[in-house]
Amino acid sequence: MKKYLLTFLVLLLISCSSENQPVAIDSEESSTEVLNTDSTTSSSTTSTTTTVLIEEPYALDEFGLELQEPPLEMKEQLVELMAFIERRIGLEYTEDPLYHLYTLNDYQEYNALSFLDDFEEDYEDGEWERAVLSENMWGLNDFSPDQLLNLQVEFQRCFSAGSYNLLDKILRLPIRPGQKKLNFYEQRVIVHELVHSLQGQHFEISEWYQEMDELDDFSNYPGIRALMEAQADWVEGKWVDGLDSYDRQTMQAQIPNISCRVALPTYFYIPSDLYYTYGPILAREIINQGKMTALNEALSEYKETGLTNLPTSEQIYDSSKFFTNERYEAVDISTLTIPNFELIDEGTIGSLDLVYLLQSTVGPIDAITAAVGIGGGSWKDYTDSSGNLIMTVKISGDTSIDLDEIYQTYILWAESQQRFTESEIKYEGTIYKGSTNVWISRDSNFVKLVLTQDVNLFEEVANQLGDL
Image (cartoon, rainbow, N blue to C red):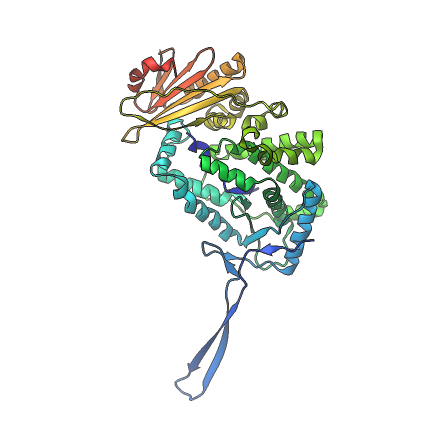
């Protein structure tokens, strides 16, 4: 279950959604090669020598994609934009940001290739297939592993207008080749990404990511990512506010055609909605109460206290929970004894997990209403030698009313899906039967779910469900 969201977080890329310091360019010097070609005509003894200049690429990235050389005027623009950001955030760059500038096609190709390059490292043997199966069983899609991978690659290709990599700390941007200066739209995108570069220098976001990676637990990712995007969004907005109406119209006309070549599932965009819609709402409230200093302090939380006190996705969806620092509670979930199955993975559940799993079926209002009432949650996954999957979930609510909202939303989720062909009240819960089978139960303290491909397995674990 952990990989539901991990697939779509774009962990290494802090992206700008499509929609006086020197500047360091992390590239090699450009060069030209002179090629001499001799040509002789058959009817004459005259020999001519021509010199052809073959201009080599300015530089290539790790995938052999050509990088664009920034002219001096463009470098001067970047220094001015950095100074603008420093004034707005109240922090200074400690080192020169690194840039890789591409044509639009090469930038999109980089995003696809870098995702595929990390894919085998991110997923152990059989883990991707298990992640896809879990999404099938939750009703998010009916794709095969290859189909979902191809869609995810396309999502990486078409979603981002610019990016900052958490690990190599390189800012990547598509630009129109041959121009001496960044146009208004390109400046807008690079302002957003330069904010992330400044964050990387002050808030230890590289170390934050690496610690989560070592723990193999990214539950602390969504909340702080939302605030990072919110700060970049706020500064970007202030830069746009400085344009006159004519320049804004010009900027709109400069937006490139960044479009997806195939239709993508809407649930791909649910984490982005948290980052780019709800995050900025909370950030404005933080800034209104304590100015930019307060937002910088929130982003410094990892540097000060580590992972334990970072904002949760619930705090992003509901700002009141941020200002009271409401935390998820620990929920213990039992390990089931299931013939021929073994425990393969386990973890915790937050608000974004609920929205991700429920929204496509019940809609955003019901999904988010349920999600902001979560007390805490845990899950465990089991597999057998044939790759069959059993998933168990246990969730608490902040109050009895919140718990009932969560329960009723899961019931609505089940009853709204045609893939469940019948239901049965059994084992103090309801079993929904179909290509996937799910048991949903609510007692005074928890909502419990078990998903399995084989409905007969409920009988195997019936005596354990009450103590799940």
